[in-house]
Length: 221
Length: 325
Image (cartoon, rainbow over all chains, first blue to last red):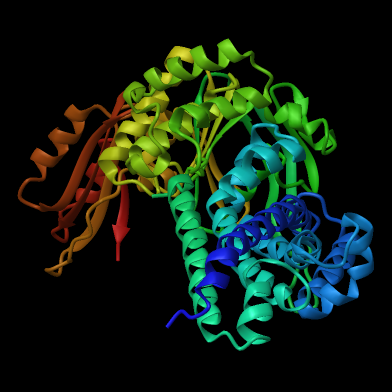
């Protein structure tokens, strides 16, 4: 059945590792930058701690643009910027840039939703202690939203696995590239099958890890 | 400790909502070291009053003087320091779910700038004070409702405020737990000398814990004063509400009256004497006697046979008489 076993044995492991690298690096950037954007969206809101309606509207608009661009279009559209950052338009390093940029507004919205869930009473009790805005953000809003922030991160990571496979079809690396270069272009059905299974396993690993993390860090019950 | 002068709070209206006067001409003084209850039905302005005292809500007019500072004059920045003189206990506790009981107590101390050692020793002391020393590492979800409220009280007192403000501290608790929480509040007042303000719709809370009480009706003060004075004066609404009479069905044709007295003005002996004298003409259909704030207060519903002249005799004996229709 596996007549292309030599291809699979030589390419599968490096492709899986590349996928992990792409997903982990892009998630890291998406979360590190998306979280502050999410906080800003909550705090600057008309009912927020630091009302800034104009700035809020501008940031929300930019986030919505990011959310509405199909990933594949975004990837091509910002390839100039990608070249500037990593010095190349192809390979897994290059794919990491649009992946991070594409997931940033996605995670920002998820973080915003998680932070909005924090009850008003908790914020007021911190205000009654004389807490500053910064102390409320770092001491109440973010810590109390941790369970939601972690499940949001899991959703983002899993989404990035599928984006990364897509990136593989247009010059990125990882499992997507393996599927494109061998499974699709060279009609190696067995390579395609193994790649699909590998992607499913990678997704399961991230989901299980994320769920375990969320469970550990959720003290609400 | 807390003084309100001519406080008015009006919520502006909008196109489809008329302006709403939530507080109207409130004058109130709460003595240092006392436990003061604010009572009234929902919508009477209790919560608005509380929020005005904390500065979470701005008054439209008047002065709110808390611990010597007029908080209506403070801006968003300077009010932060003034708030540290008030510890706040919320109806729904609002503990931080992602922090243990111990960490919940440390948070306000961190904000108030206590040193690391102070935070640790004081949090331990406070947990002991509220009887939860063995629950330090429990998260709120692992505590019962009463235990959560105890942590809430300890957290409110963490930064050593001279004032404790409790907003409906009992509404989420069963009566037995409420009693324990109130005992704790009285005990803390006795030990620490703090001033306590309790907002509640439950007069049982006032009976158990308060020295002075104010009742609000539609944004105005209806009655206010010492619990003992209000009880002694049988013409006050609060004296009736604090010691309610069980509802009875009026069976026969005789006239029904409600009798009440307080031993502050009327000795029990004269009440018993007049009832004995009228034994043939009077039937008692319901009644209650309670000792509160150093006096016994009694209330009876009686049926009176016509032509017995009982009403005048009751009045002569020092009972207050109200006809029940």
